[in-house]
Length: 222
Image (cartoon, rainbow, N blue to C red):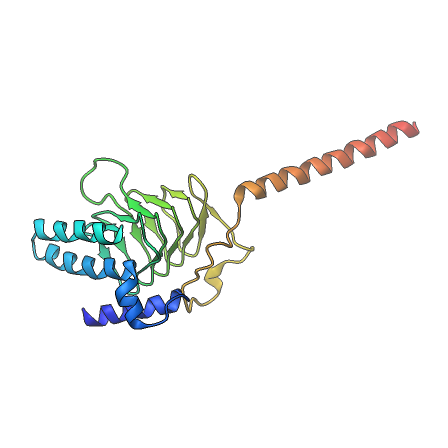
């Protein structure tokens, strides 16, 4: 437990430049408070208790604005930045070095029983307001853009944006080709598939206009 808490404090300094001291993190960071309370609730939940872990979860929600079901499995290096409105469902599984921003939902899609929430890999960044729904798998080193709604599995080393979420290529480079040494938090620099489609259409229109102009010139010569 203490090793996990130490790591939870370290990741805040790694990913939030606003953090100044350990005491500031311990006293003022709701994401840190949320993960501490969740680890306690999850421990009791695994021991077969139900009511007490849910009470701790509800207190956690009241204190931090972050709702994490006691059954959710969360790995090391987990960081919730700001965190208000974050919801994590019962059967969610989260790997190591995962970062969530405010308003993220890791939820279900209906009343099905059993595994009904996402499985999140390692080194994943889920941006503000994104929704990842259903018993889907998000691979390692994935970035999900702000406001995206992800309903299908995402393979490793991908960037997802849009509603519904679509896999896009970032700068034409496959990040699987480079060694991942730290979590990539540049979630403001994501491609826009709609803008790219409009650009492709504009290029096609330009080609057609040039073709029509060439044909008009030939007809004029005749």
